[in-house]
Image (cartoon, rainbow, N blue to C red):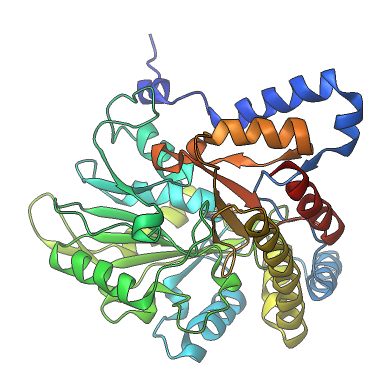
Length: 411
Ligand SMILES: *Cc1c(COP(=O)(O)O)cnc(C)c1O
């Protein structure tokens, strides 16, 4: 009898979004009028159309592929040189950060990269995640057999959870115990908060002292407004020896439906073999790409390249400006209702503390039933999220202004 991967059976049945959908459906079935008024500020997907520079580049690439001389079949698995170069040059070298073109690996998304990266690590690492957390980091480790069973709060034995709350500014304290792999996400989803240079320096120092690796998810770096906040982990000296960075075109270029992202794996990053030798991770990730991936489509990569053209940069800035304008409106509206708000200044999410005595789900139900607005209950991202809720700024301006009005009617 063929055996299945029984680690999958430990996964909690994707509790958060199915439960949200169940409650929304129960509400809309019972309230056709409320259903018509419903505004979704729950899920982290962009809403605004693709930048013009991208559309033009995509069209042009399609036409090229339709000619004998411009047709391309399989490309380099790691990405076309034109895109790897544009990324390394614009996102790193022009900012004084040392990253070589061949340290960039172009993929179809950061979600996939965050999961796939586990292929190049051993199975006996101590793994630390933030709580609340982007669920992909946890679930991919469960699937890989790196955890024990989950409890009814959704915590898995074998993982080290780093609580993030108002008291620590949503940046976890350095753990007292030794861990080998640490997932950090800044600007953060779900809390919309950022880590300062000093806080990131402390994490890099910890990683270097403990031979640990930081998996740094910078999917929201384009939203940073405060010039003192690092956009890349490589702004911290020493990070090339201890960190992998994930970036995506999903949130800056509106690529959630186009699909393109990249990882940076510096050649200076070494890990230990089972016999205690130190070896670089870069050749392993390179080999993984060649063996298990056939590259992102040429057309998509030309679309991503266009985000780095002068027009592309302007159009990305306008998109970010739009969403951050939304965030400011939502943050101010929540604050005006007397709610305590976090994030939303360097990220498109506002993290709001529920009124005293209310749980995350209490607020969810109140917002759904009284305001006909869908938010995300903080407890769905981990126990430390209990008592908070997330409002997403990914929406049209008209919807956001309406949500702001409805917030004040409810609180
Ligand atoms: C949206 C998001 C990503 C990007 O995922 P893609 O697969 O590239 O669309 C990565 N990390 C976090 C935390 C996100 O919210």
